[in-house]
Length: 310
Image (cartoon, rainbow, N blue to C red; front, side, top):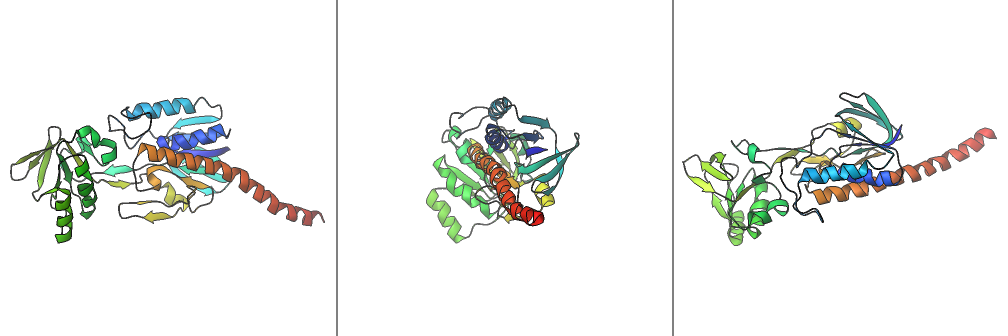
């Protein structure tokens, strides 16, 4: 039996695993190889790693983690998780079942994009969702925000600090008078036409034949947790406006004792730096739960043992 099984070997899972490895816990990391930012060429905003390829950052982290003798790695997909604290079992697609005293869900999310031709092919290259990750590199060029709902107002109001911004409504919603005033105050233009497809690097061919050229495009995807392990285990979800994610305490423990969660599946945000921070907290808290809950269990059992002996 492992002390902990970490499901997901991207930045959050790797960070949590490192804390546990350094505490000399026996851990298993199971990873399906589906990093959320695998489509991006570079990652930004993470100290000492700004501008590096995200795959290189993840590979370096894995190489460093695997130097610790109590860590095992499995390239596989977990399909089922069940059990309770100190007795969890996960079943993988190809490698069978494994048991652990604790589980850590670093599942990540998949991004569902609006149905606009040419958008998916440019995701992470010239179509983005996070201005802090990719806005600076547009060098103050023109920015297009493809609206998906009224939530796109957030991007449309934020992005002018990175370049002249146009909110392309694309039939998704109609800003009210107050929203239009907010956009005008920020200098954000409004385009009411509909998009036929994305061409070139970030050019929008509109249904009326016009071409709107931008240095980059931003869109709010619809994130979703791909693997239903949290539901199988009975973890509570937080019904956020953007997407439901796993509800955790400040220690990153879920509503199910012994199950921790971190990274994008446990908060409505997407950033390498945030995921690493989440993992750091989750790994340390998980280790401490192994230490202190075992002592509490022992203290509870002691009076019962004395009573039985008497």
